[in-house]
Length: 345
Image 1 (cartoon, rainbow, N blue to C red):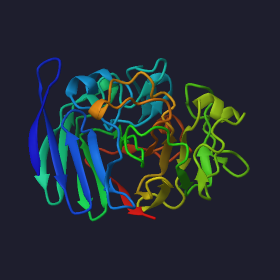
Image 2 (image 1 turned 90 degrees about the vertical axis):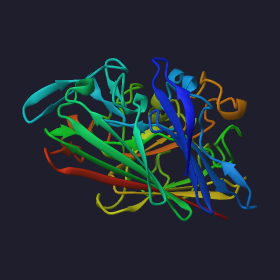
Image 3 (image 1 turned 120 degrees about the vertical axis):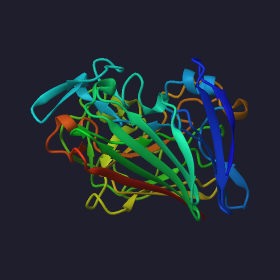
Image 4 (image 1 turned 90 degrees about the horizontal axis):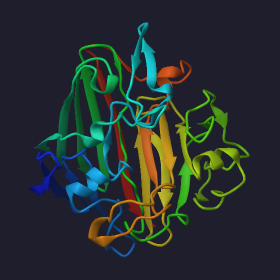
């Protein structure tokens, strides 16, 4: 493991860049936002390709508003009306995507400096989120571990709180299996292990509360399908999201690791599988990537140049009692895991 200075934030806080590798993967993580800065994977020819978007310095991470590579909390995705009720008490959150709350608020976990320590085959990041941080109740202690397991990167989440709260953490990496900065991902081939998705009510992407069947819609990825095959169809959900930006219900009981998605690049031959313990997965096709700061090595990131597969509890679930609930009870441990595995065809 190698740890070097990555610079400092605008207010003078030091930031580190930590890299570690095994024979199959090589990655780097910054303590700013716990962001995955790079992830090198071997392609079908045995050549390494860096398959995640990222930046070369802290100012670019501070300037970007796409959450690239970051750890997200306390709640991944959106909470409608920037409020929720828990145990009879209403909590008002910061409306950073007014009128809604997105990815933890104005100063979510993506903008925090995480403490870092080396662990076996990886790195553990931790932070303390104080009571009423961005409006959330309780003092929350969080740790997230990035662990290399052969050709897989496991992301392991743990949190405890001294008061009942809500919690749904994720990693917001943007992937391109041809390599970051290599252009559009519309020829990637995706399979989602999902029978249902959560439709949204409008372009603000708050779920209606329904779990809708994917059958006979462009949201059906139960069989391998090219990402760009139906992305611009005249279908209201795609119009709302300007492409795919929706949550799917992962088939199978939450808790055990189970397959949520597989995606393949015919150009590089790289296959990425996503297994998770969480109930949902957000598939996002980088529809609003334009206007990013310059990426690593001078790369320019444009619309649909990457995809995200964010494992999570369903968006706005604190306000939808029929969805799996992200409630973390006082003194209990919130423990979830997502594994990104790589192979080649």
